[in-house]
Length: 535
Image (cartoon, rainbow, N blue to C red; front, side):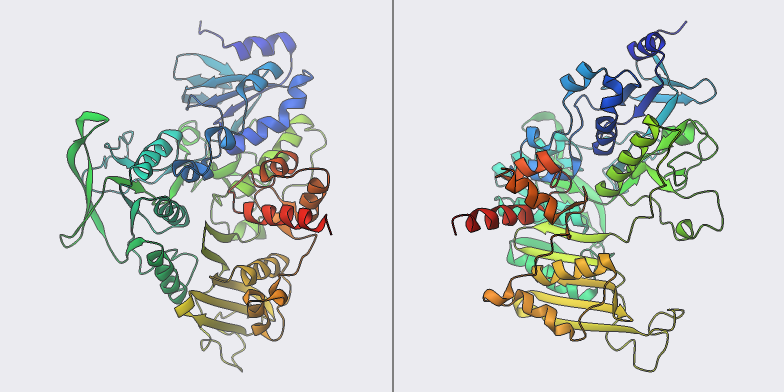
């Protein structure tokens, strides 16, 4: 007979339905947080299995932790003592070997089994490790990175980056995505010597066009970041042993196609992520890019299994479903994952009265969060201003519903400013803004609301001009924190109630607990309130 876990025994005593959550990242933490009242009342039993020994923390802010801009306590999302006092059973530092769906058992790496009534996969994603000589290239084996090579996904990686920054060492970031650029800019500002290497013609190639990429590259160089574009990496070169691990060779250079090398002391792999679906696929669940679930987040053909967050791909069984027709897999963003967690928690507590399924998530807005480098983009910006001429009913996008595509561009590369707006019928289909934070804020608002732009597009440029008239319009209903879905009036209400710091506002409203990109806006609202008070 297998040894029963404490959670299984507890469920047998109480008779409460038992929820087992695989994974303990930000999305799983939000789910457990929402389930806590039902656990305290004895209506549910919850067990969480996490492969890290730590309680949940915000992975999005690991780079900030690595450069010393936040602390472990500040990015923590769960208190183990509080959860255990409420009755949640935590199985931390353990992996799931396999799931037996026929018997509804989760087999753990320590040999124990946990029975479930409902199973939730919140396994998130794992970083992509490129196939380079010097790295473990066997996809069937666990990746073991050499000393001096990190993926900036956990607390150990943050500590390695912190040491490099404090010593002013050479940091090489492989990848031109948003997380890599944010880490590069932050590390350079804090004293490290940083180079960014990427294969594309320009950074953020999936979100911005070539001209915006040129303006962004200049902004990176102005802040001391070396940029190597169109550079294909071929190998990781290991050199002298690191002081912390004298028996193990450490990263010394990135070798490029053609024989060139970029030397460094720390290599940060920022080459994207891939949903963790191995355990789900191993127990026979349907997977594609992620674990396939319907609009109620239920796995295909198994009413006892659900998936949320980075590992979940909403694609229902209805072949005529318009929402699923253009499904591109998991969004990989913390905000949609949190909304899924909140919806699923409500369903698990009261499955007899489910809320309407979550609506499809709108096209995401990409925001680069870095001091002095403001980039925002959304939708398609591939077309140029002369690709859609008057009289061309489909514009640059045949089948565009009869309305022509119109593209407006304004560029001032000498001052690091660039804006591009693609509209159809006056409504934004896509935009990119570099170095224009106030115009970007207005464009984000218009894009998310599907509202029409002013007929004179140049009116948006005035927002970033100097002088009192440049103040961006204040809209109480605008969403300040996209991750948690908190609007300006909610934050303003918390400030009136006495919240005087960003952390105070976060504790009361959850604003700023996600990617951290709204911290500046929250801080500005606090300052505006307290400046107005004496007057």
